[in-house]
Image (cartoon, rainbow, N blue to C red; front, side, top):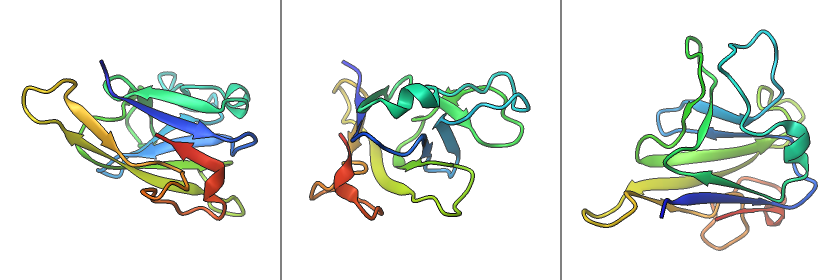
Length: 145
């Protein structure tokens, strides 16, 4: 069975979602598409649908996002290397001005040899759980497992 990152949200919640990889690459998952962007860049979920979602399941082996980096023109796999990934939930990913950002970290580490699947996620993203790493004014509103 594949590892799955489950993000849980209370409704209403901010409209856009991204994950920053250990190398610093921001992968946008939910955002407003624009005709000026490369045609291979597509949100994983449109903002209207995301607005009503109480959870999102991301298969670690196959989850894709838009790498918000010049020169990269297609969606890519997000979880490609071990390390700490930061989940960011906000109304406007491209601006810090006047929009609260809810952040947390999730660690991806290889499993011991011979165990399946070959990755492991640890952390409770955007959660008020004791193990959570939260930078939000109201952390009890958002959870992920």
